[in-house]
Image 1 (spheres, rainbow, N blue to C red):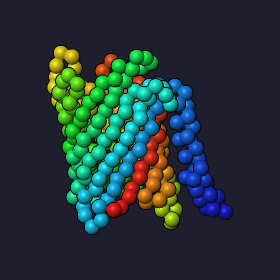
Image 2 (image 1 turned 90 degrees about the vertical axis):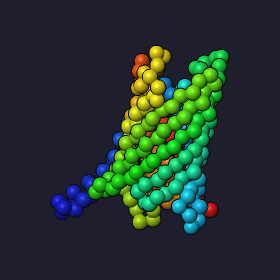
Image 3 (image 1 turned 135 degrees about the vertical axis):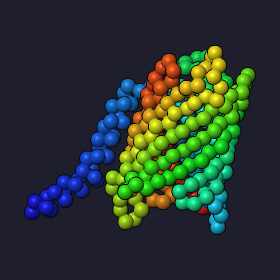
Image 4 (image 1 turned 180 degrees about the vertical axis):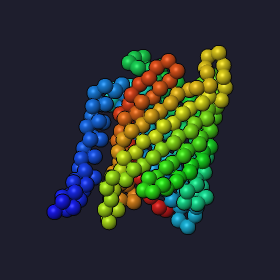
Length: 231
């Protein structure tokens, strides 16, 4: 009886308690945040080919659901070297606006190259992402290096492909130039969240992110859709 009771407790924690705690945390952060990011990430696999097409759009607001801060549209060609290593090259368009009015929008065209590595440690999934950006600003040109270390922790899996997981990452941004106006350190992003995989093609993720820059720090609520298709 004790053994069965312990098993029921573990099942309850995995199915209900842990996801509920994550939702409570995200809700509490939402009340103290100063920004909301709504994102869509898509990947289109080319049949019988190691190549994929990546595309995404991100709507980043100064407030939780209003006052556009940044619109980012990005696409890339991905090459899957194997199941653990992926190389990418892509382009992004970024429009940034001031808080309140006037918006005073500025635009950026961005090229980037990327290497992603995945590692399985027990049931954990570790992810490394190395990215180099060439940023064509309206009145300047800059480069930037980014490194992200992420981890996914499975919470609950089913035989039909659905799963719930906890996720976290930390990403540091390093400027390629050290000038009087900008140091080498650009920013650091720490993210904590949870996700649901509905099936192999569709998933949803939500969480909290703290973005630390040289002279300020702010919090964001992040909600994203992850979509996989095959051609």
